[in-house]
Length: 178
Image 1 (spheres, rainbow, N blue to C red):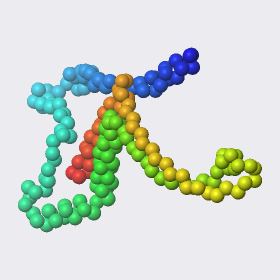
Image 2 (image 1 turned 135 degrees about the horizontal axis):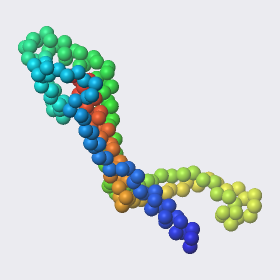
Image 3 (image 1 turned 30 degrees about the horizontal axis):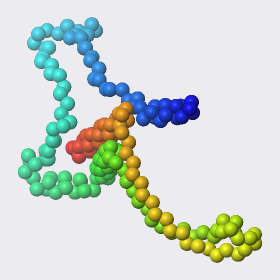
């Protein structure tokens, strides 16, 4: 009884997700550092906080020059750039991994059918020792189905992590493309 309880406990713990919920840390910056020199009002300027824009399309910036030669050079550079090809392959791979991770949320099913060749022993046939037995072909068929309930969030965390990796790969691809 204790062994069964321990086995059930181990099975439940194996499905637990240990991934913490990510929270963006709050960082307060001082308005002025103590080491900074005091500038006159005319030299201070207007500071603007950076706003990342990874999600915005960067476009084909060279088109503003309306130069067909530049357009052709850009097309050749894109086609022959091995770094860009690697980034594109990594993006495709990351998107495929997201698909595999999402597939874990669905029921799994499969089937198999095939022969195997066996020579049974005389004892298995109920024959006396030393009896010559001929090989036989044994056909087998099997089917299975399974589904994992995501009680503790392990599968969902895997999907979320795969999506973040794909977003990262896409940002890298767009940066290389630029």
